[in-house]
Length: 130
Image (cartoon, rainbow, N blue to C red):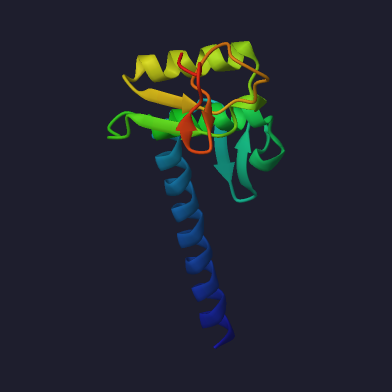
């Protein structure tokens, strides 16, 4: 009985090892639209750190890349985290949207007129047109 249990354990261990290798090969053959996004048994990683610890702008960009991945039907995106992006981040987001033929509505904090549309109490504020 002990020999049977040891043999069964070896078979199970071999099966698990084969399945693990198969999973790793399948993941390696499936490129992600966000090049710095990886995942393993420990969790999801962005730029080599746990995604929750990654720069907010990098998280936003990765999310947009995933949303606009090839074959997706999403062509309109909205984010309320635009204030986390600097001018380069906004430009990169605009370039991604243009590359994929998408529209991207980005909420940013502003002190007054400049660019964009200003909405106050649910309506476009006077002089708030782009």
